[in-house]
Image (cartoon, rainbow, N blue to C red; front, top):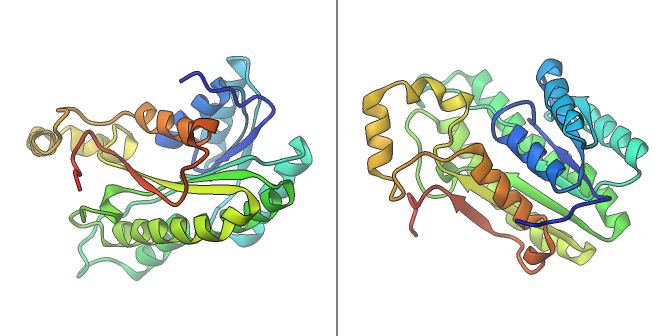
Length: 252
């Protein structure tokens, strides 16, 4: 897409790798200045350097999105550096694997804290800045696992992503009065580090591909392109939606 985001500032959480990295790179290519958030300073710096080397503007922001003070400091630093915040992409997430009967309470709490509370804290703080500007865009990276298709041994993850879809809709309703649009993207199986081990299993790959009409797994760039669209003027009348990027796996 030919989208121009010049003079806009975007904060992408969990942008050190995978989907978050692809989103940060794509928004930067469109001209946005990128606040690259990650809990890992090395991966955050790597993504930021990649953007700068390509001629863009970026800075790494190391913060735990589940920590209110850390989030507030991160967004304050972003505003101090660039003077505004136009786009927030809540992408940071964790995905522990365990059945409901064996899932550790700590893993449950941490997953809800990062995947759902983190989106709340970032949206609340960024939303206040966007309200003052009179405009803004928030995109939450959810999952088909939290919207249409439960994933085996991913109870905490599915619960957090289902909550994120509901949170998206409430934010869209509340923030519309301030000129802020809020949408969720629900990816299917994407080729990232999270799925790397399972992609080495031929039987698992066969099962996945049987259920995907397009016959392939998604790429991080497939998600990034939709984020770009939702951040563009072409999506000006779209808010409160949960949009699947899954090769046709979910048809209803």
